[in-house]
Image (cartoon, rainbow, N blue to C red):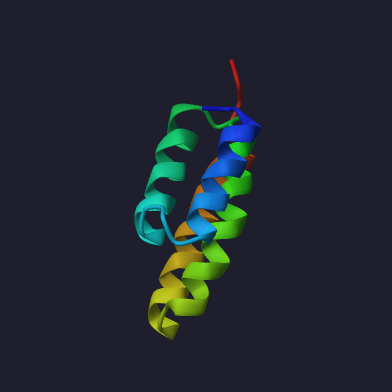
Amino acid sequence: SRNFHCWNYRRYVMMVGKGMPLGEELHFSTSKIDENFSNYSAWHHRSFIIPKLIDSASKDNTRDLIDEEFRLLQQAFFYRSE
């Protein structure tokens, strides 16, 4: 789940249009972050997904997406690893 090369290949597959729909890709990265908040590869992957989602979303959906991402980031800021 934290293998940078696999995440990089996943982005390549996404870019050539053979991967999951973007919403599912975002959900997948969220599930990996929920499993391990220190999964920096999953966080980095989101930096490719979210701009693409924003480009294709309506103004209301864009706002919802940004608000949800901000909530997730707030959790990350206050997360304490054990």
